[in-house]
Length: 251
Image (cartoon, rainbow, N blue to C red; front, side, top):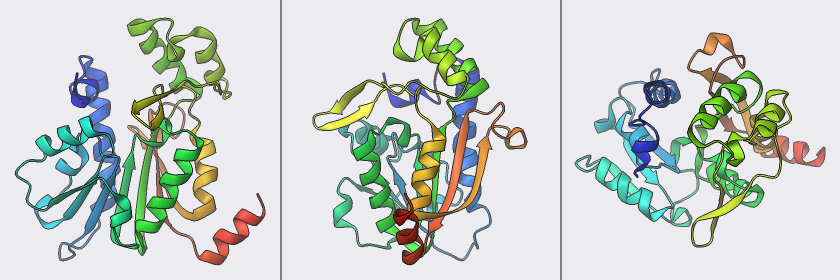
């Protein structure tokens, strides 16, 4: 089963629509850019590369795709074959600091354990220009959205970690289960398979340690805020070094 089979080609039409909508909502931050600017953009944890494929004006953008999972990188290369301006990279250390105008990171942090989260945030901060923007999108797994998602998952795989009544009810009241299973997506790469248990509020606190939070919005119905949305986005800029140091000192 490919990544697209689990997302934009899922058998459920609502899930297919939500997956396409989340990409469009992430990319809306690019719409205000001057047509004369040649942007250098990194998709961090790109999956099958569909976000890059959907970027407006892709032919005039220098897009870089970073996907550490070999199987997903192979899907990204196939999905983006024929786009000459796309570069594929599996070693972030080889990229100069401050390279990118934008770093997009969608549907990644909900899968990362603590140490991997720290490393990913450090890498994004290092690679982003001082004038750049990071766009981080994660699933909303609390309150009513957690209930709706939980019922959907129970219909598909009742009894799994993310399809247990007690876990769903905990997330419904804003106290998601903390004992999330950890596996390896490939040798040496730890990850959380399930979205349930992820708390975007905790990630937001982590983001504020290194970045300025310029905007936060929800998808697919931004006007409803956190009430009935499935995704949350953070738009970030680098915080001044002294501000970042001060925040860390007050932890």
